[in-house]
Length: 178
Image 1 (cartoon, one colour):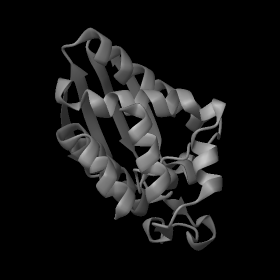
Image 2: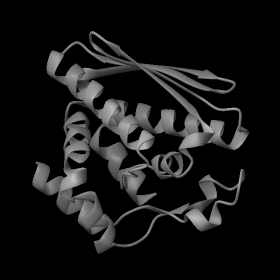
Image 3: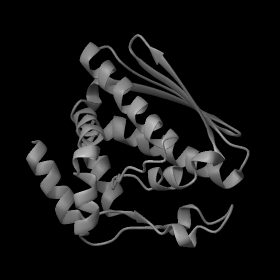
Image 4: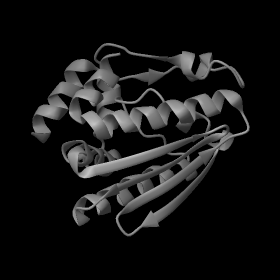
């Protein structure tokens, strides 16, 4: 299964953020576009440094039916609780969010072709605040910003993740193609 996922990723290409077109406070989401196959992007995504987060994310796609999510949209961001009653899946949820937040704090972007919002979040990590609370069965996340454009990105990201939880792999593939 994992090999076929990576083959599909290679065929569909890599979604990139044109950081230069994201000028200042506006236009953040407009700088993203889908492209054809991008060998450099695929190599980056599958590099030893990125294999851990990619593997964790793919395992979560495979286990999406074991995940439950509730998002509260706030005027300045979101509060999301994502849990699983399957202990191994809850551990994967915690590890994935911890890995991504650590990468944000260390300014180590992660090539994430199935999301249009993640590249923007990595390009502008100082424009929003993140709070992670580990729960016995998952995570609670609060992300907020005083920048209206970043709030739209945070909201878009919450909707993406909710689609991933609801639909699993088909949602990922739609995110990469659209």
